[in-house]
Length: 174
Length: 428
Ligand code: SF4
Image 1: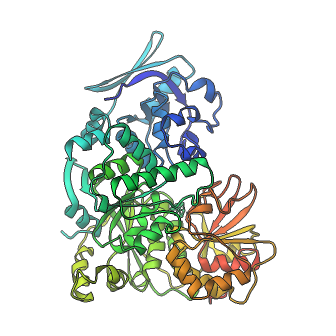
Image 2 (image 1 turned 180 degrees about the vertical axis):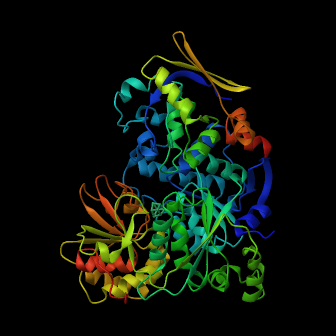
């Protein structure tokens, strides 16, 4: 199983697509590691500086429909090779969400109200996020401020995370 | 309670139900190409699991950028080539025998009614034209497919489209699917199978049905599906003639995959297409669709004819019919890529290549090429293309370029006029 948690990167926008997560021109790379420097390279977002902001993060918090666009799994991989194993959003594009769990990572859906509360309380501040999987709860903390957010992790999704991804799960089981 | 085609296929392939909504299916055939497969191969090697579940059920091709244009694309091809040899994958199509995956694999007889097919490519939905469940997947799903021959899907919900009436001359499957996507939107069939039925579909060739199912993903659909019928059997006959005593026997066997009369659908939508005009897209989303008439006169720099949507022999015949004895406009350049070597050979034998070259068309080898803006006709910033492909995303055929999607007939007419135009075959 992967490790989950770490410093939070806040991306305050909906519909961040797979081209913004990892531009198409890097699809000719044949290793996941080669993608590392290009994560979010084309994302235009006020206050976001790719070179400065992607280092040493473990969790992304964003708005709605994260990962829309193409089916490229290079998007979760670009996150993975940067140590980001958790994305928290209102919801995700279907294939991106499946790709995350297939990689043994977490695409966590929280209500729009909780997402808004997170942005209001923590965005712009040095924030840490720790996770418990049983029961599934996210704990955000910055200075003396904390916020606990329970989330849903059941059935096949949970099995994939516990197995460390679909390859290991399927290889054992089928 | 009756079942849809997808439900029947799921039931017949069920391996496991890890939770209430997920089905792990056995996969009959895994298709591979050189863009999404190399990382799966490398990952299997790194895990010490460099194996395949069954080399005879894996089909691989180098098609997206071929012949290689640079070191990186050459390396992608090499990884797939070396792997196919190492694993004994006999159905591997290298330079000279390669063509666009979703045109090549059906032509080779690899798709059967009732089959499950996955590929690391979103237009895998094309193969549903044969009454199969065929879906595009990410690389990890592909990797597990290669290793174990299984893939997990949520229970299929199906939207049925009854397409009634008769198509006017000059109006084709491409116009129908553009119209449908325009009606339901790019998210209109997300997480759903799109089942196409009705007299218009019954009258369509397999090539046209493939064009139709190819674009299911542009409405978010997991797979397109057409019920198998005598047209399907005729197309497959050279490959199945040893399996069945007669065509009727094959049809009887395949008919069990047809949806039941009392199947339960998410939605049933009926369109009478008798008055449908040729359609084309504008903007950067495939649901931005208008009659060609309303876009007529729009200047284009390049016309592209080919791809898994419309690069088959039927398409090339239509293009030749429009272009015969004519010249393309001075202001425009035309790139045409027959989708497979067989299509190319047929076009040569039928004299279509002469028609194209007399008109001033540039023919390229079979490849995806310009469809995804990687080679063979990439647009310059600010340029406009008229294209028979399936995606008009911003920059799809080259950064800063615009794409109008349309049928081969409309593309050919546009090539002659230099501006978007209805074809001479259209009698509206
Ligand atoms: S022709 Fe275009 S859409 Fe079809 S498989 Fe190739 S790149 Fe994809």
